[in-house]
Amino acid sequence: MKTVAIIPAFNEEKTLGAVILNLKKHVSQIIVVDDGSTDKTGPIAREKNAKVYRHLINRGLGGALKTGIEAALQNKADIIITLDADGQHDPNEIPKLIKPIIERKADAVIGSRFLTRQPMPLFRRMGNNFLNLVAFFLFGVRTSDSQSGMRAFSKKAAQSLEINSNGMEVSSEILKEIKVKKLKMKEVPIKSIYTDYSLSKGQGFIPGIKTLIKILWSLFNF
Image (cartoon, rainbow, N blue to C red; front, side, top):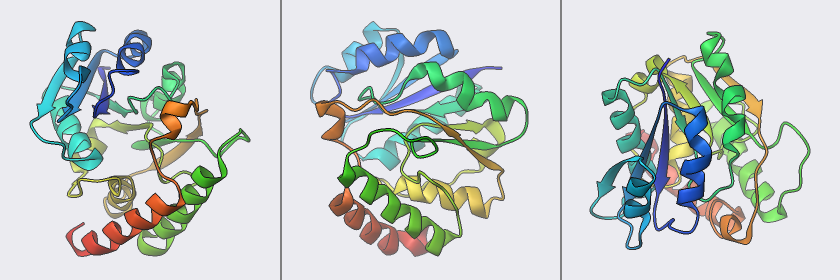
């Protein structure tokens, strides 16, 4: 089966090269969506033999994932993996992530940082728990890690996803799509590698509130 990894990247020249190198042995192809970067993100990805799709302006995480999923399907992916460019995900966990899809036990798999105990900054835990509740009350989706950037989709699931949001709220929109399209979802435990760099990104409590506002604003467009 052809596995394609999508890495949305905006000004990630510090970490992207190592992420690509660590990914290579686990996937058939790597697609980097250069989301309007002003640094060497694109050149580094090409140097490491990733396929690069570039946005002329920064569209946000949702826009980058939409471009990446469409590109992966055009490249005849059977399984599509998403992960962050900041190095917080361990590519060695990909076999575990895609196993439920290969065994036809799931259409979509979420890598959860909360299924096993591990150190996590309080602000990050609070933001995620808050948005877990939002996903449940708005969309009826039970998940332990609604904001995880490490996911896997079967070809069928990827083809059915309709992504309309451009920002961080895309993680909640994907869960809504899984529910509406009646896709089988499974969570598997993953670890998260926290560094000062990766902690400067992602969702805390206040960013979580901002994401909620965007979700509510966009709700009728989802």
